[in-house]
Amino acid sequence: EIDQRVTSKLSGHALARKMALLAEEDRIENDFEQKAKAPIKSQSFTAALHTSFFSCSTCCGPKMTGCYAPTGDHCERPMEIGLRQDSAFLSIYDEFQTEIENAEVLFAEEGAYVFKAYSNGHPYDTSEVWVALFEKLLAGSTPLFPAIIIPNAFPNQTTWNLIRRTIDTELTGSALTCQPDFSPDWRTYYDYRPDKVRCGLDVVLHPGFAVGKSRSLMRQTSQLTKDFAGELFNGVIHQIACDDWLKRFRFLGRCIAQFISVFISEGAIDKSLLHDGFDYKRWKKTQKGTQVLPKTEIVDRLAAYVVKYVHAHCKKIDVEELALNRKHFFELKGFIDSQAGTCRSLQRKDNEMLAVLRRSTLIVPILNLPRSFQEALMHWIFRNEDRVWRYRGGRDGHETFQQYLEFLDDRTQFSALPGVAAFAAKSGGMDLFTINDVLAYAVGEHVVLNERRGNIAYEVVTAWVSPRFRRLNLAVSMYCNLMEQASCSSFVCDVLQGSLDHIVRSSFWFRCLRALHLMPFIVREQRESYEVVTQDGKKERFERLVINTAPILSILKVKKCASYIRRRLPGVALLSGCVLITAVFVLARYRTC
Image 1 (cartoon, one colour):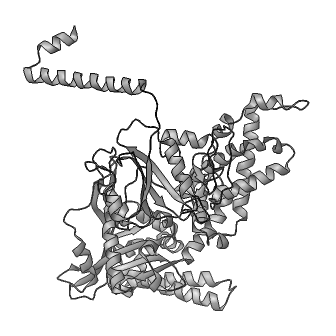
Image 2 (cartoon, rainbow, N blue to C red; image 1 turned 60 degrees about the vertical axis):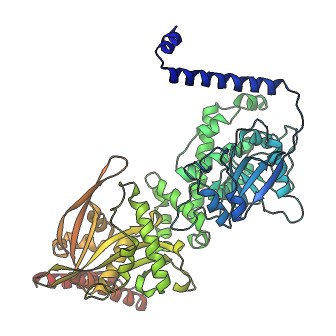
Image 3 (tube, rainbow, N blue to C red; image 1 turned 90 degrees about the vertical axis):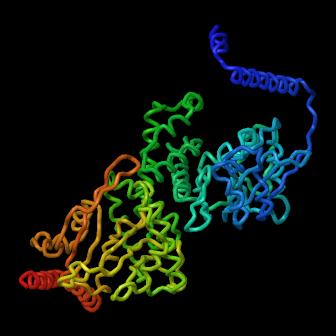
């Protein structure tokens, strides 16, 4: 009845369009019914690995689905994959040499990472074709890849189910050593951004793997480098095997591995991972003649044991030795940061790690770098500002890369001082620095604050610190470095409201100055600057600081003198008091002036 009423009100063109769509729907249904009734016959397929620019550019034709198609949002990706040496396409063709399915592949040092497969809507089950292709790529005495990494449910669900019949997922997580982005200036798009091989979720195929019809699971000996949680898991399992009560729960190894992985990466104690994977009724039948605790109590004791072991192990780690493995180092650093409010005993280890990071960080004036690297660094900073300000509604549209390059040249009557950058220190010197080693930067120039008085100041235009290094006070160190180089009476910068209080609390010297009511003499002006609205709808307010550089430079000289005396005369008991008295005396002298 409703259809009749709607049809009666349709115009001639709309009615004809409706009938055409219904006819097309009937035709499609009839085609499917005929194909379903037709006898099954074998099909011939061809699989190919595309690595060259031209072959990759021909992938993802107009009939392919997904955003890599010519009409997709990321139609540039096939050409980008062809330009890269660490990316490729795996394609499947039918007997007419028509591409019916493909998947992107990223080459990591651990193996080939396979992404989701997209098709042209064909009716075939290509799971056996994918498995045969993986076997071919890993066949022979010299396979093309050390391993093939298959994320959960990739390249498609049927292939994943076929592989999982006989091959188990990874017991522990592993780090991926790869460069996901095309360049530091170009953030590459992925359906799923590769980060690591996830324990309990992903499958790793090694040379010699075999997929059969048997449903008995087989776990291959993983040759991948374990992540920090994987190393901890080995220790936990060894300790469990040595304990008379705990060794009865060794069969929960996979659940324990996932529990440790979540605990290290997120800092959360998720007991449901142990509870849901523990078949208590089945286990209870095997415990004849022994007292059996309730399931919740067993899970609580297992979780408490693992947490206690992880904390104890972290306290014993040699931070200097761990720093040689940067991935494990930052995994531990992130875990300790997540436990800051719950485990005070890890605070000492956190301080040791911060000390290692400080020693491995080098602040370099941008002008001291080779000219070609200066321009490359400015280009990276220009692009990085896009990423930094993206969630704040975007940067000002009038900013150009050419304006950033002009910081390197003498644009005014003052000598150029484009700023400083912090790098991860290397034994080979500055010649070995790369863009990937940038940890922080501060860019600015000389300005005239008061034309009548001729007051010259140095103004920081933009500054950034990597999130991993934000507890090292790198911003303060870079600003002090710029004050020493600029030789100006004033230093100007915009900071988030509340940042000044954070700086004062984090420094022993500034806390002393505030206690002596000397901070107003150092911070000559503090006023509201501007505000932005983030994508979350939150307002971020910035304030402008005008700093008197003379007392800061005096404190820096006193600190250098104190560190020199400390190296020459270790163990001097009154050294700290003498240094503090000297600094206060100097500042008091400036205040009276």
